[in-house]
Image 1 (cartoon, helix red, strand yellow):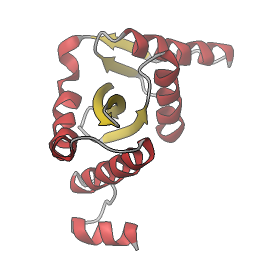
Image 2 (cartoon, rainbow, N blue to C red; image 1 turned 30 degrees about the vertical axis):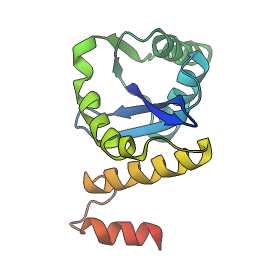
Image 3 (cartoon, rainbow, N blue to C red; image 1 turned 90 degrees about the horizontal axis):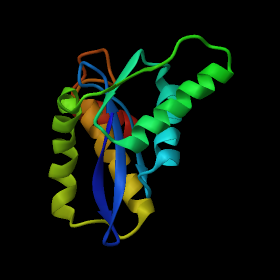
Length: 153
């Protein structure tokens, strides 16, 4: 799990992203803030869509650590014994750092977005296209352009 920066109206906003150990995109979320509430919201969304991970590797970001601790606290309140293990090791998240390159390669030449809504819609499309290219959305051997047409149509 990591976050990267995207410019909207000349201001930096934060793109939270998570990938699994195979490099497949788990979830992503664009947020105007990089704080405990944003990190908690991202983890709730990612866990709601994909289930509980055994462990999460992240950099030394305090907000992300506290956000995941909030999730563990909610698990404790719900009476679940299983907690999400948190690993804060700078160099173990290289997989996601390299995955950010694809997003940056497309968004940097755009020189930012005019509205948060348009940035969110564009990032959703870029991430979906990236997931198709990685072969995440189809178990069959269907070409990427046909998968994209099926999603768009």
